[in-house]
Amino acid sequence: MILFLQSLINGILLGGIYAACAAGFSLAFGVMGVVNLSHGDFVMIGAFVTYWLFILLGWDPFLTLPITLMVLFFLGLFLQKLTLNRIAGAPPIMSYLLTFGLHLVLSSLALRAWTADYRTLNPSYAGLNFNLFGLILPYSRLSTFSLALILIFGLYLLLYRTEMGRAIRATAQDGEMARLLGIRIFKVYAVTFAISAAITGVAGSLVAQTFVVYPQMGLPFTVTAFCVVVLGGLGYVPGTLFGGLILGVFESLATTYLTAGLSLVLTFLLLLVMLILRPGGVFGKGALE
Amino acid sequence: MTARIARKTLLAFLAIVALLAILPFLGLEGYRLRLLTLVFLWISLAGCWNFMSGYTGYIDFGPVAYFGAGAYATAILMIRLDLPFALSLALSGGVCALLSAIIGWATLRIRGAYFAIATFAAAEALKQISLEGDRVAGFEFFGGSHGLTLPPPPASEFFYYVLLAFMVLVVGISFFLEKTKFGYGLKAIRESEPSAELSGVPTLALKIKAYVLSSSLIGCLGGIEAYWLTYIIPDDVFNVMRTIQMVIMTLLGGMGTVWGPVIGAGFLTLVAEFLGAKFVYDYLTILGVVIIVVVLILPRGIMSLGKGKRGEAK
Image 1: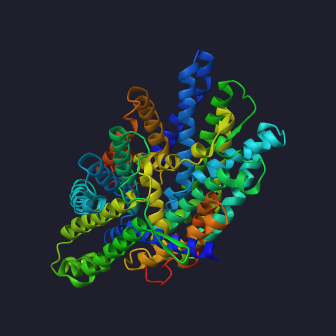
Image 2: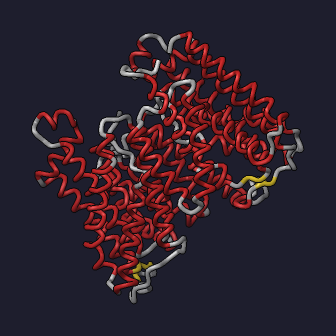
Image 3: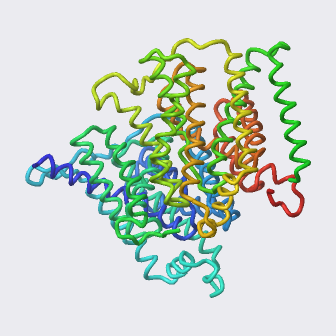
């Protein structure tokens, strides 16, 4: 019983991080129709920003979050202006290829700059945890989980309570109509992609505190984002929270009761079954073609 | 393309094939022979991907599933059952046909990004099964991350001719698609699936047929490569880069055309070989930049260059 509860809690804590990593992916897909294959590389870059600020300047990992936010916001804006803006309206395959090209460039430049070494962050409080009736809750996981929730809630507020958010949602619903109503959709695209990169980068900073950091960590996170977003409904941002939690718990239970390798097989099978049976996500609120 | 030009291109292609067929007798060997063999392999792979995705517009993002499955099926049949290569290869084609019929039957009802993600997931699932299957089942079958070693292969010339023949077969099928009702049906799906359905095109059946055709041939190519290299591991035969390469090559040449994959794959294999030899460490970065530049500058492929103002692929 305690084993089951412990895996459940581990899964929930993991799921929060997954949700934070995937929210930006869902946003970019919902608004621009872009399946961003370089999404995981934003997680990687965010993780490295935190890592280097901690190692070189001795900053606490949590204090690096605003820096990551800024760095990734401008990187996203730059990449959007330079590349994605030019293929707006092109067939979707163009966005797969373009973003895969970006993935290759970002991950191999990172490999050149920082080598393939596996790195971990070890702040003084890394090993501390909180014992609740025999269940172990590491402080670092609890705090990254809370921050992940705050991040998603912040994105929700931005989308549903601000003028910019209204413009973004209008563009997502019907770009042509939004344009007729005087929304500058290219500006919206640029800001959307920048926001997507920024929150993903911050999620990367959170990832750095519990996962291993290395240049090739991006692609697995892109795949995780796929799964989360499909579970929650593609393009439906609030759904990512539930998608993340479901995936986290599912993986954690599969790892406990089966083996880690099989848990990945099951994850992909879950993804396949979901796509076939409920392509709109658990709530059926995702974008459908 | 008018019929006359199409016939001329075909004749030129056959002349080149005839020339390629006698080259080994004129002293072609070693590295250059293997490089040309590699070009034939990639032209065939890109061509097979094009049958499905180029003609129907359904972007298959997991063709590598069948490349890997074919490689593993051939290897397992040859090692565990001591079957000869030709029989193993034919059986592997059958295995991939069956596998793709099942996966295609389930996934070809969903569209766009969903289909792309689903096929990608199927490929990754197969890769994980070949990696972890042994440990879970508790006996030696796939060889886990150590992979499998095949019996010693014949000389390089053997693969040169096998893959040359395969390439001719793939181009031949593309021609068949251009001229037959089957091919028109696939193109109708690409233009507008609901209209095709309304006009009486059995869309789901056609899509599954195209998917199975493409996947079983890709499976055979996986088997050929496995025997050629004699050593396979999951991370190589199921590598997502192979999928991307098939997609990029076809797109570079022009999707849904007979010659697009031939030109794109021929060009990119040689460029990649050159870059890989010259810039060992920055190869992937440069390849990424090449992909981005191609998408931004030539979104309709090399084939669109000579098309004039109308630019319609006919």
